[in-house]
Amino acid sequence: LAHDIGITKPKGYNVTFHYNPNMERHHFGQTHPMKPWRLTLTKSLVTSYGMNFAMDNYTARTATYEELTNFHTNDYVDFLATVAPQPTPLDVDNMHPDLKFNLGGSDCPLFEGLYDYCSMSAGSSLDAARKICSKQADIAIAWGGGLHHAKKSEASGFCYINDIVLAILQLLRVHPRVLYIDIDVHHGDGVEEAFLSTDRVMTVSFHKYDPNTFFPGTGALDDNGPRSEHNPGSHHALNIPLNDGITDEQYKWLFESVISKCVEKFRPAAIALQCGADSLAGDRLGKFNLLVEGHSSCVEYCKKLGIPMIMFGGGGYTPRNVARAWAYETAVAIGQHKNIPHQIPEHTPWRERFRHETLLPTIEQILGEPRQNRNPQKKLQDIVQHVTEQLRFVSH
Ligand code: V1P
Ligand code: CA
Ligand code: ZN
Image (cartoon, rainbow, N blue to C red; front, side):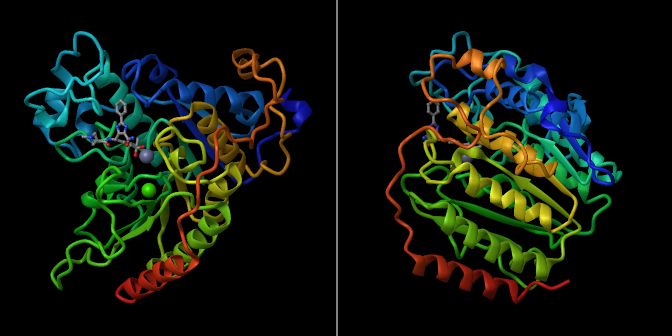
């Protein structure tokens, strides 16, 4: 099959793919939007197209206690390791009276095997980071990572362990500066917070922003971290707040305008790109109108910069859309997105699973209705203007 499609390893350019098949065995609960099996669906689509032949594939390790406590506190990780799962995940509204470390509520339930799940997610991102550090990878992919809300000593928004922070700390052992880019529909608050006091990491999150109604409610345009002459991290946190319904065309323009300026001023030695797929149209939680084309154009743009890069997963709550986007972005990483057939190959787990679908499935099609666009062009121009002003304070 792979031979038919003609996918082979490119010479002199290495992509590594880090995946742990045991992640999908974990369940947040029946009604919880986070579905770890979307990772299996992604992997099966990647394999259906024979993309695995163009990459080095690794079964990701689980991260060790010592690795997790490189960022998180011992008491938090100890608690994660020993806490009993909730008796039944009847997550109607199981808010606990005392949420220790914000665990056990409806967003961050205590499920069977939680600690293993967290160590696998972190392990895959750390493996990816090490492949970048050792120069064995130009791009390293960890779709099981990208859990950007987790704090030093607290779970938040479906995230328990911040695998991205751990991976960036690893990159910083070798790379003087790391640019973190976050295209998940939510604000990458946990990663931003972790690096507010350093000028070695610049964080840029694109997200829907509505402090009253949309999680986590932070990430306003003028929120660039604590500003003081004693803080080297001043001006190194950038936020791109957006409204419902942003289109491919607008997002691509904004992304390229902002990221080109960041790269020019900050001169990163490595990029950490969180590819949360909840910014796609039709997402169960997200509100944007992006198609696979627009979402993946961000990956394409970053790849063209020629800077070593980790690609993480993240949010994404309409599993078939998530798998399409991440499989397509895997194709972008190996430089094959223009060559793969649009139609999802026959005789694959995908076709088997969704055989009731009437439309012939293609890799780009997105399920769900578009939303009304509430992003006037003027607002987007003001954003670029603000970013330009912030970047005046940044130089390397
Ligand atoms: O809105 C909230 C909290 C719960 N209220 C106290 C406010 N939580 C959101 C969390 C979204 C997390 C996104 C994670 C990521 O950025 C990275 C993996 O994608 C939330 C939502 C929502 N519509 O925003 N939780 C839930 N929905 C939820 C629904 C059903 C069951 C459990 C949680
Ligand atoms: Ca984001
Ligand atoms: Zn999200």
